Length: 257
Image (cartoon, rainbow, N blue to C red; front, side, top):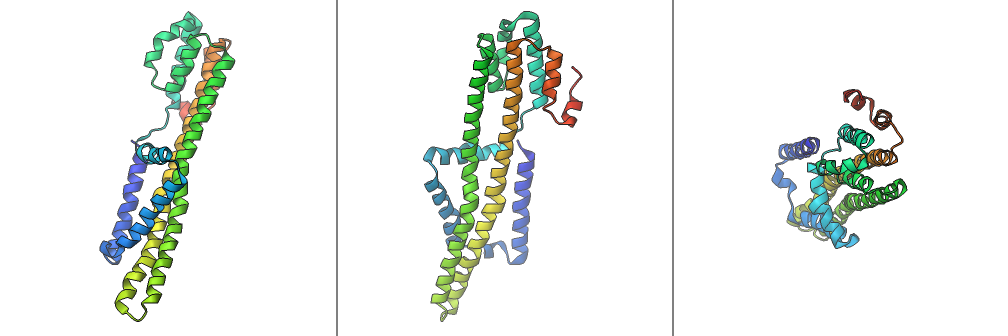
């Protein structure tokens, strides 16, 4: 579980709720018409700009990833790759077949499986590159749903504001009608800003960060797998090469090769 996402989300919503309650009571900030216009309206527009599978995937899988995902452990990946490089150098690449079941990363498992099968290094690189490109495309589509929501919600808030102003101006002679119309005008803008800056925007950025981390892990794995297949590089040299992809703090935590 991503503790930062959970704490940030709960903390933000808690502070906003506290501010609302202190200002006029939370009930003053709840309006059914405003909710329908902004929340339901923006979701419908979001569905219109997406394919149904893309829309469902964004909510059912990708949003949960923002809370439950954890970054790849790059030092651990390097240790696994170097262990396999030593095995391949000592016993041959066929000996790696016994380690496949222990690999949790499917990208690494596929690469090593191709090495065991004797696939040419060029073919391995092409296949892994294609997988990475498809992964990037999937991630872009998923985060794109939330980026679109970030743009759509404030626009729906503005539409709600105009609806509220029109209702207010048409009933200026009736003081009782001015209040509800003004509430719609103000609350829809508030709701749009909340969706864009508290929900959609942060989630999209979080997903982009996860995607970048996964891309870096794929690049690290690809380089290690190809060098294992070639069998030309000493595992100690390969370890130093892969460690160069880590930040200094992560390098220092790794045991010397």
